[in-house]
Length: 358
Image (cartoon, rainbow, N blue to C red; front, side):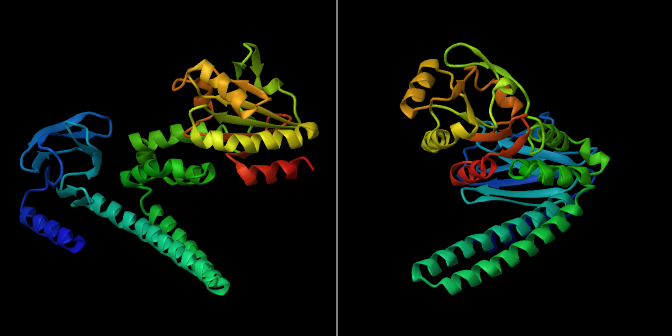
């Protein structure tokens, strides 16, 4: 199927190759998507074009002064297809099995980079399957061999991926890649890669989004002083984080409606019981909007430590201050509110607390 898809795209590219390159032409062929309006939208959300899709086919033509990321979406909003738009010819095949785009130097560069990333992911999936099979066989030697080979592969793949990204630091494609993956990267790696971008790329919307996100997560990086805040507790009293006394403080973001949070809560109850007398204090911040559900869940879970909420999600300023993307989310602080660890839970959190409160 993939071979047929590639062949079709190549033939389309050849058939359109005679068009002048003072503008762009985007030819799309879809399956499993209802006909109707299709929009071409710039990275700044400006509408660059509107066309009709008939029998799964659509065409955009136009020109851009500066290459940049654009997005194609249907009038019904069924997904967004990113496109490295420049004055070139593009062919898009989209359907239930995925999207394939051919055309333009920038898009080709992105495709090659993505294939490198995808090949690494496929290798990881294969290694996991092999490890599972070896485990079921009880073959420890085979498991160790797979592990060693995979770790060596990962090291080489990361090195190659870093080298390939280094070639894109002068291109808006580099900014797009960084923005697409920023939430998967630790702050130090993201900062290093952002700093690699040249000034022209840093001026693009994607790179600006990376910087905005980076500034948020750097506020809660290990070694920084935790952003201070004041919030009402379950009894209606104001609590200021910096004034909470404790040799070690755990800031825990959770919600009554969050399954993983509720699953983690018994670990926190046990942790507090074992280490409160050694100087551990927990401050839980609920991202609930229903006060009664918040209070009921506290009782159900046996939470006896400080519990706060502003009941303002998704506009909670404290959640934004700590760049909370998902919960449960934890921040471990010392007595001076310096951040010691971020987003530990379960056994990893238990070990860290034990280590710090010996």
